[in-house]
Length: 401
Image (cartoon, helix red, strand yellow):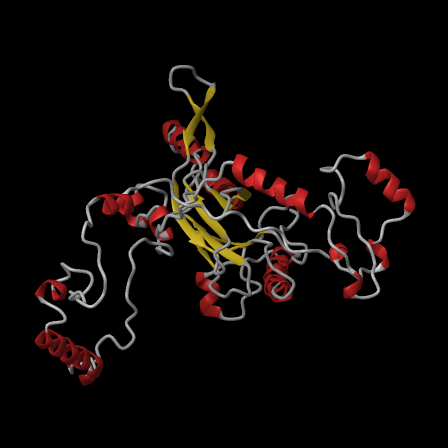
């Protein structure tokens, strides 16, 4: 975690490896002049070593014998001067005069007869200008003496005498010392440094024939174990293959299960026809072996491997169950990638339909060597799923190899 805010002040690394200039090691000319003056005054006797050592605030001055002085000068006057009393507090300043107190105010400040009658009925403190009434004069020489000057001066003296005043002392406090220092992010651990998302895989159930009761089967529920994982190139989706034969697609950020496909059931459905033909040829086998084989068939086959298409424009994946591989369309293509994915999957869809119509598994393979190793098998027809994206066309298993 990056410490964007910290109480530790770090010096910038710019120009820190440079040597200090040579002028900083040379004595100042002003200090040199000050030392020369102090030496001259020390030689003349106007100052002493106590003044240089800051023990004496003012230099020693010899009294002039010509000036008159008191013979009976005692300590009484010194006590009067040194006595500490209440500190003098300056009175507050009066507010400056307004436009209404001018000798030639504008018309908007002059009161009407109705306003003058209303002011006379009010008390002095409630009037807008107190005892003063705005009046307009032609010039400054026409202004006479103010009739309420003595009264206002007396009231101000009463205010200064009766109203208590307190000296406010300003504290010189560094504002940075009031703010608490921020600790380092590393000291605040343990705290979550990564987001943990839980993906809950549902339990699998399958039927098994009981050995005690003949002809009856019981359902067994087991927790599916994840065998393989694969992440989409954009990191938005996660695909898992479990031991119950299901391929599940999750949303990475929320852990929500979006789609699940039973790949093992598709592979077993394609092998039923071949198993029936083999069962007709091997009629002489023991019944115990047949029961064991039926139990193995009922148990789902795990998904051994799964891989997302590394090309980000093709939204499909391939899953392996036993010796078969199933191509699955995820249906997550956007507006730009949906056409490319549909073009790729439509060719595979056409090949599986051609293989199913001709009846041969290798009718759609042109290369003879590839026809011996790979067979395109159409999966059983199921209900068509709705793709997650509105632009996609295919969703679900496309073909079996």
